[in-house]
Each structure stands twice: as structure tokens, then as C-alpha cells.
Amino acid sequence: MENIANKEEVNNSSLTSKKHRHDFKDKGNYMICSICGKKILNLVKTNEEGILSGIKEDGSKYSVRLDRRRYFFPNEWKVFIKTLDEGSKHHILFLILLHSGARIMEALHIKPKNFNFERNTIHFDVIKQRKAKKTFYATGKSREFFISDNCMKEVKKYIRKNSIPDNNYLFLDNSKLPENYDSLSNIDKKRYYGKTETAYSQMFKRKMKKSGIKDWMQFSLHNIRKTYGNWMRAYNVIKPEDLCYRMGHDLETYISHYGSSLIFTEQERQEIMKIMGEIR
Image (tube, rainbow, N blue to C red; front, side, top):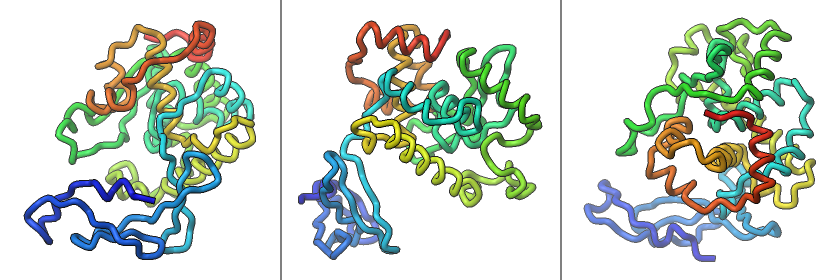
């Protein structure tokens, strides 16, 4: 199978001063460029439509979805969320992901103090930042915006029920974090939150399979973020620049991932609004 990267242009200054097209050669589980030495997994088709797989150096399997644009329709979300115990920590995390469009890394770093229950806003102060992007400035260093009362009520109830201090993380084991954790870089934080992120990713796959959604393999945690981006467009009240801010995107990325036509029926729009609640 031809690898897409065969046609990718790169500029490896240590080997050549000119751009070149990768010339990948099959080397077992990997494809290696004969010009610059770039190595990628040798991905092959699986029995699951739209899923490729490969084997890493440590022997573990790695799967890749050819199409990452899948998002939940409202009836699918309702089926999925019912696989979680209502009011549990896991249930609250997935509600926050849906109602805020946060990346899993960002949601894991939420504390009670990040919610303003009077204004119904959420504040993300640990966010993904891509300094390599020319439009890095557009994504900012933190984000705060309105989320609906449907989500805020559940979060407030959970915090009160479990007496969680304002400065404690909701979804991380605070006892296992170093005292200087808050001041660490995102890369250094990964050592501590990485296992929790992986655990939630695996849980999501299990719950999706249990839900009975036919193409559950096409979903990852990031598809909940895709769902938020498309559901917000269904309201027709959120301007693109505001949605970019809420999701921590630059405009180019937003257009690339959310520029397609919406195919929700009027009934599905009503269901989305019932799930999400008032949006402003």
C-alpha cells in the first residue's frame, strides 16, 4: 500500500539544503526514507473499514483512523453517556469535554476555582500551545468563556458532594503530584498526567464499544471536541472567531476541520439544544 508520506516534501537541513520528496523503503514494521532517514510506521489495512494498523518498536500495536472528522449525533451521545454512572467523576469529565470542547489534557487540569458559578464560565489555564505555528499568538495563553447551566449544575453538585478544595484537580490524583506541579511546563506535567490521559482514552473506547454504535472504532476522545465544534455551529449564534477562541484554534485550523456543511435534521438540532442548553 502506498504511504501518503511518499509524496510529502520536507527540508532536512542536516542532510540536504533542498526540499525533497521522501523515498520510503519497506523495512519490516517501518518505512525509512533513503534520502533523509525519516522513519514512520508501516501501516496496513485491517478488517475494520477506515482503520490502519502498525507495530511499534516495543511490540505494541498502533492504529490510525483514515478519517478523523467523525462526530456524535445527539442520539449517539445519549446512548454513550448512559454507559457512565450519572454524577460519577468519569461522567462529569465527559460532560465537561462535550460542553467546553476542551482537549483531554486541558480538562484534566481543571480545578473548582476554574469555574465561575455566578457567571457560568469556565477558565482553562493549562492549555495546548503550538509555538511552531505562525498563528500561535491567536490561540492565547488561557481561555475563559460561557458554558451552559446544564453542565455547570452537574459540576457544582459533584464538587459539593465530594468536598473538593478549590485548588485541587478534579480528575488527577493530587497526592501523587509534586508540590511544584503547577509551575511545571506542559512537557514536564506529561510525566504525571499521561497515565490518566491514556486510561481515559482506553475507557472511552470500551464504553463506545459497549454503546453499540456501529462505527465506534472511528471515535477517539478528540472526536468529542469535534462534536462540540459542530454542535456550536448548529446554534447559528456563535461567530467563527469566538468559536476559535473557545477551542484554542487559529482560524486556518478551524476552517480546515469545521468548514464542511452541517447535515443535522431539524429534530437533531432540537435534540442538540436540549442536551447543551442555553448557549451565549
